[in-house]
Structure formats: C-alpha cells, structure tokens
Length: 110
Length: 118
Image (cartoon, rainbow over all chains, first blue to last red; front, side, top):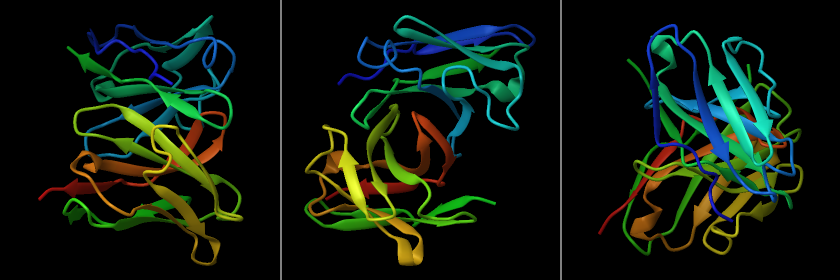
C-alpha cells in the first residue's frame, strides 16, 4: 500500500481560497467514502477538520470543506486566515481495517 | 472532556526494548479503538495499527506487522505501543488517537518523541 498523494505545498493570501488535493486509488478513496483531513500545527496534536469526505466536526470553521471525485479527495479552505498556516494530511480507509495517510501539504498564508 | 495523555519522551539505544503508553479519560475506554500513528522527522503521518480496548485485539499495517506490538489494558484505561528491539529508524514522534470508524480520529494524544541513537 502506498501513501496517498498530496502536493508538497500550497499558498494563498489572506481572504483567498485554496484547495489541497489527495489522490489515491480504486482500493481506497475510489471505493470508500471515508476520507478525513487533519491539520497539524508544529508541536501540537493533529486536529480533525473534515471526516467522511465532507463532514465537519463540531467546532471546526465552516471555511473548511471537503469533496471527492473518483480517486481524488479535496480540502478547500475559504477566507484564508493566518491561523490556517499549518500542515494538512488526508487519510482514507483502505479496506480490511487498514488506513492510508497522505504525505502532507504545507499551507503557507502569504 | 475526552483526553488521551501519552508518556514522555524516550531516548534509547539500538537493540533496546521500549513500551510507550496512552491513557484515556473522560469517556468509556472500551467504546472506541485506539490507533497508533507515526511521524518521522520532516515526514508525513503513517498509520501503524490499532487495538480494541475491550479485549486488546490488535491489527497492524503491513509496514509495521512484526515490528511493533499494540495492546491495551482496560483496567487502567491505557493503550501501549512496544518494541522488542529498537532501530535508529524507529526515531519518530508517535501519536495515539481514538478511532471513531472509517478514517475518523477525533481525539489525539500529545505525541511521544522516541529517539534511538548509539
């Protein structure tokens, strides 16, 4: 099983929108609607921002949204804020009670 | 409040054994599986495996099968990740997380940094 593919970095200015892609295969993202996204600030524990492809946990800003098309999932952050600068990881169920993470994307708010 | 509190940083030599822990509080410890996730320096997250705290049954990522042992002791609401013989390549930060199903990890421990060096 290979890691899911994410761009190494994305950037945007405050107020703009950015989208981070996460590409898998028919064995994971393409089959299961269990994609989640995690935000990691340096030195802090990961924080769930999207689960089951497009669901937002309680307390997560509505600026975060998720979607899926075929074997690719996407995380969109609208109205970028300085506090959004972090690493973002996607994660997909891959069957047989196994999971795959993406390699991570560093978001820079310019 | 649901909390996972992990044991502190460890510095070990290659070949040594190690067990790190993750204690849950604020919820019924047997309700959710606990997973372990590795983050090597400057790298991404890797799912290692999980345990069902009801009976300590564990399953592993093929990448970690045979290299680590995951277990849980429900009497003290604690999950464990252990190595019998550490390698330098095991140096990483290890997180425990509550697996709510699918790929949903709602709560995470603060992470345990493991350094393996001669």
